Image (cartoon, rainbow, N blue to C red):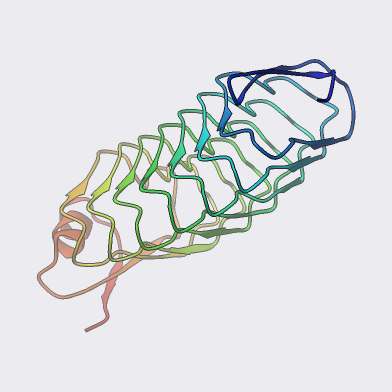
Length: 205
């Protein structure tokens, strides 16, 4: 087992290396809270298929992390899991994930594309806030709730597609998104939200 990773009962507890690339070994099922937090030299992380959960602040403030693939077995992404990972350019969230925690990707300033799969039902408060390069996003039909300020400060966000399944959108979700247009169906909750908050919208059905 790698001596720079503290692993207890299939959980990565702590990483102590300043390596650029880290490979988490097969058999690990949980990346623990704060396990890689502030590993500023880290650029690439390999997560094995055995991992099912990424804990709170697991990779928070890994400022130089550029490459991460979240395996299909992961079902939950914790609060602040990738917060302040300023160098990540794209993220694909696997099909098994049902909820995206609060602040999960806040201030991931280089992210240009995000794929949210069917299966996610809840997008947490501030989940993608200040992803400044993000231009468009499609919310899948499985999502029912979008948390407070989920996309706040996404300055370049121009288009977001919100399906009929969404029945709650929190306050300030599109604060500081001056160019955003909501794509939605007629008589949907998203249309009502756009009207109430004076956000441009386009009916797509």
